[in-house]
Image (cartoon, rainbow, N blue to C red; front, top):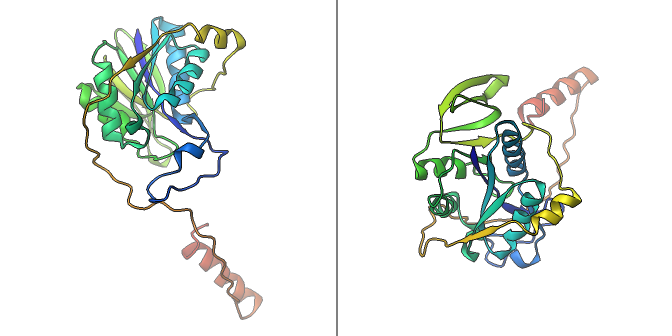
Length: 253
């Protein structure tokens, strides 16, 4: 089975974001970056599928030159090779643009299965995998918690609302967006890190022109505010008022 895994490089959760002067994104030159966590679960699931049924795992990413860092990390964890759609404009592009860039690179090969994380930790739109499936003309399923392959087809477990799950069947090829927590992540070994240096990273060209369908108008850090309200009455009255405010105003119970 030939499996592609889409991974994204996102700002590290340990880094304190700094907004650019236009207020439309972070100051890219100041940021520290890491692999998007939901994509790490997709990568792990692909490696487990390869161990069960055999095949090849190819990691794909779109973005500037710095994206090579997470591609090498994925190769060190066990992926066989990588595809990098390198273009500075893709660093903060919307899901439609990124999906089109990835689809263009993937059309040069034939994949049986494409996995992505459910969403990215920076923009969190949860759209790239779905749009990618549409661009490639493949069936797709989202929020996947378990993947089974048998007789050239898929059986997958989807997470629904309210603690419910749904099993569905899909033909191959297909695209799946993987839910975080589906498995336990592995980390790169010293042997894997050394082997990754010799693995191929194929460079693919981004579309010459593209138009973003979404635009970040204003980005800002949440403002901290304090507000004190005194509740009067008997202890029983105060307790009832407090419960009401926690339930209806703060919505924490």
